[in-house]
Length: 450
Image (cartoon, rainbow, N blue to C red):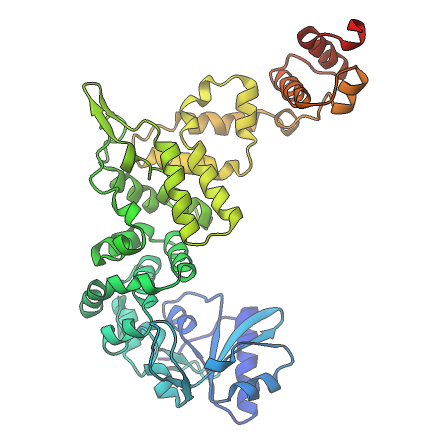
């Protein structure tokens, strides 16, 4: 099979790296995901290079390199501001920790390809001729849209346990199926995923949730037992029934899966939104009650925030990402009352940090349940109607103004300033003079009282 390469800056720079290595007498090819994507007719964003040149030789041939994994034969070459992974042909020694080989030996192209994870990622491409070199049956599996390990799947998963999660992620993102023996090995080896670092699990799960096919990915995690190993709190959503009037779709798990299926229909997905979709109803698993009036989830938002916070901490999310996800969970039920909010509350709500994420979470929540978008449409309409300067008007009164008026600095200042802003947002005051007079009617005039 021969391919035409795209004329993108990244591809041109990667071809330049191959040409330089070959000019110095070394073999060099494109390898891995970029070749898989080109075979699928998708233009890759990143290109990896494999070569017979040793790491020290690679480093000497290019002016800008980073020895990110020189011990394992990997050098990052920086060209035109882009980073390209250049790896020396290698074969791995025994894997003792379920993550990395104890050592590597430099080897041939064939040996290098056969130690990789899946056949679709074992394809090699000569960027000068466009010829695809297939030593592991990867072309057939890409044609069949099939994920299959290279060799014994139990051995591959024993070498690096994260490969089980990667198989589910690739199935989700690419819309592929998992080959039967590979799937059976995932089920058998699932308990071993607990030995993988939290950071690596977080990164794979983020890709699974935010790069397309998230519903399929989560179903595969459940089917193989991986979900219960890495996110047992999420697995508990299964069978948690909801009021049919509001959730005709079924239990909390089905509701969440439907939201995940809708996620990304409009393009790129913010990973924080993806995680908030997964966790937004987590609290329902521990707050469900039922009486003659029906099914209730009193306090589920607070409990959900607590549960999600513990998971995000466990997976070692950055503080900023953790706080954003928790904020999305915290406010997702406020849309129920948005049409009854006073102007000051509504404007504060609409101007919240990251409000587009809040709005999208609400839209998905509605579409995956009752389908009523009236609150969503109300917010969209108000955002269009209310000028930015009315959402975030300049402050009419400052702490200095209050001091000049005779008020003593202290906690009262914050109360007064927020109250003045509320009056401003409600249209009760429009100037500094009106605002100070408004304050005087409520808190008196210290200057006159002395």
